[in-house]
Amino acid sequence: MLVYMARYYLPQGMRYATLEERKQFYTQEFSLQKVQEWLKQHKGKAKFAAVMGRHTKIYPEKYREDAGTTIVIDDYKGLNEVQDYLVEFLPEAAYYDRNVYGSNDRKTGQELAFDLDPENITCPIHGTLADKMRRHQGLSFCKIELELVKEQALSLYEHLEAQFSSMKIVYSGRGFHIHVFDPEAYALSTKERRQIAQKVKEKGYKIDEWVTAGDMRLIRLPYSLHGLVSRIVIPVEKGELDSFKPVHDKRCLPKFLGNSATS
Ligand SMILES: [Zn+2]
Image: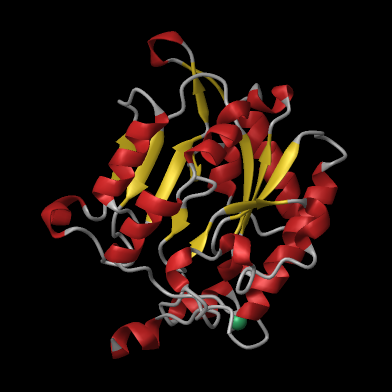
């Protein structure tokens, strides 16, 4: 426990979720209806993925061998079955595949997305990403970094508004994602995606290029549980972002935290 405390710092109230808590969340709280609503934008059958315990090392014992593996969930009849898989695997992280597939599983497009993570923020207390990596704290973050990454997300959203009209911001548990649903964005080539990522970086936004360029096609599933911080991944409207406080906001607090997180 001391080792864990020394290695990872998180904003107060954020912590790893236990297996029992993940189970409670995916059986009682996870909203298939909201997931379905979110995936309305996604043409074709969505693929999902789950990681049980890559970072937390918390996973069902019978899946020890696959604890760090990204398990693709594409063989399912309805979303109820996807939920069954999540209840079975009790993952620290759940994703969906941004690729759109046509017949014969051929990729016909990809949802464009931008990923802003707090570790990329240079913090007055914890320093640069390089400083954090040197201390093996690449996954740690603090309240200041979370606030700064939120400001970056809002600023990037406004920057992208010149080019795209249908976008959504998602609080990912650690940082923020911007999803683009304009039909033209789905049709962008890999080269065009790289150029967009490059331009955004040149503007000073510290995005994960792999996500925008499409090399990393999985993105955290909205309304799933982020098991490293015990927060629900939720879309946040642009107008409410400024006052959004993920440490306290009830919408992203799973029930298993009770009142402990808000006090
Ligand atoms: Zn910090």
